Image 1 (cartoon, helix red, strand yellow):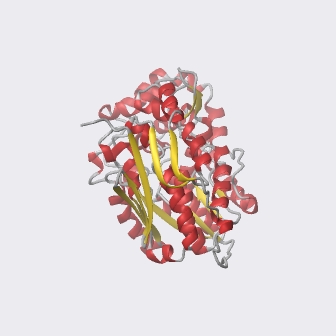
Image 2 (image 1 turned 45 degrees about the horizontal axis):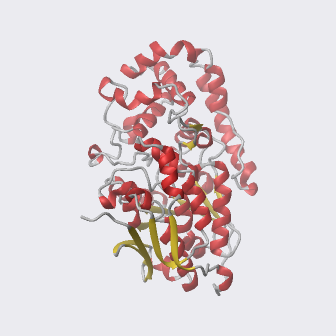
Image 3 (image 1 turned 60 degrees about the vertical axis):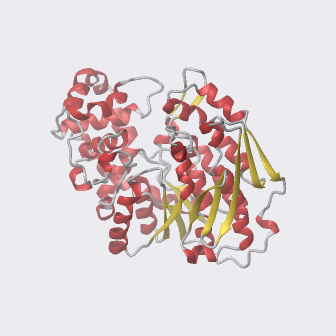
Length: 463
């Protein structure tokens, strides 16, 4: 087999969405028919050219190829995607146990070649009259705590959320479980969950080539902003709400090779959200804001508010990516860092983890490896220390036992106890935010402040 020297990418608009071709291999994006039919022909062409690049940006790094040729026009989003990808290199390298400098070199040294440089913009396209309704908000919906809380708050504010679940084929069992959860959710709330089959998701993780890598995930929320535009157009919405929380911007450090590393991926960082707003505005031809209603909250606070104020929605939570075979019959694989994190939150906040679908004691010796990284107190640690330490401490106070909690009690408790009041005050308080829409800000913060005041008073008794 001869090594690949270059990659050719093409894309076509179809009656159901967009087909992206990588060396003639097709990856289809399929929208609900009534949504796609209402999206203008010119806008479809613009979206096609931008998605052609966003979905394939990391292929040269995945396959270690220097040339990528696009049989499409240069897109508006090229510079946005380049910066987003640039800051994702160190994060992907860290996960892949590779050199972040080498990943960065490979990314920068790849120059895309386009069929032409005629960048199409909506200003050159007649899109017809727009139906405007400021009460509409599009939420890329995952059933995670962030999007469930965003939905709950939006409903309480009197907004009309449009929920869109993007099916990621690289996550083997995730969509199997979430499709079932969506049916129950729709039956109980009366709110539809629109499904978009995102075929190019097989490129993530290198799944399409049987390669195991983190490359491909760094643009996920930016891609979702692009892919949500037909729904924004159909519903006349002015907002796309992502689930970027306060924890994301804090997980930034300089790695051992001297590169700035965004552990949560740069596309979830606070300053990038405003760039996503600009990109969405350029691609739609009218002012749009990409927002985060949960940006003022840490994850522990999110969980507490979601399960305390909106238990009828919290029961639908699924935060596991369900990649492990153990997730085939359970919506929690109970064998990943995410499951470990959420389980600890449940125990800390007196949320019965079994009510969410957990069947095992994640604190026991059989699962100790899941918390291993949480005891490595280094700048490269993936999760913030304070949230997991407080969760361990509160779990012990709530009567939970297990080898992980015993290890925390032995190794970390003396240092933790000196700062427990500080952690509680910080993690269960409103934090600065810049991507919460101004017109809803006071009402949203009032909801959060009311809940957090009661939560702090209750948890303070355990300290």
